[in-house]
Image 1: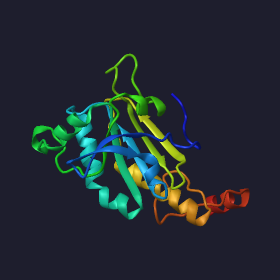
Image 2: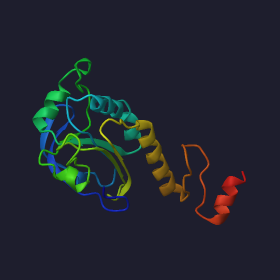
Image 3: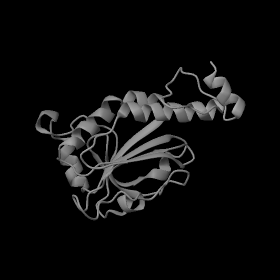
Image 4: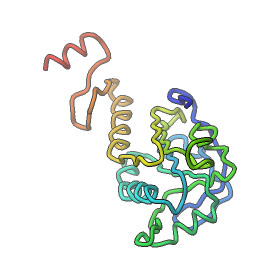
Length: 198
């Protein structure tokens, strides 16, 4: 599995469904430079764990937007499948009500570039549950790759955005389990000693 942290996020230009019902032919990551981006991959439309994740990110969308963060999801399904899933009610396994972009990686090039494509021992042609936090300059600052049965935590994604933004604004680093409002530390021996002696 490739490590993209510290490197420019691979750009892409693909079809996507935006606003829950609109297909666009040219959805490009580079258009979001200047914002933070949470790009997450999921295996397939119309599956089991996937809708719980997509709804969870939708439920937290105002919190991401308050952090100047664009959420976008990607799978190797077609835009036709995305649109059908988006118009299927939640009670029937659909994701009706999701408004952030769903990218159609039908040719599997995006999953390949982000090194999350499953090529053996699993639903071949799908992607692992990869998640990438991309900063305003287009640099990957965090990545997490889960196997397909393991759903992710939106709370942890929000915590990591808070930590990144705190570091950018204050120059202090964020220790284990840091949350907004907690003490950070200076990345010096004196800063570490001060943190642990509090």
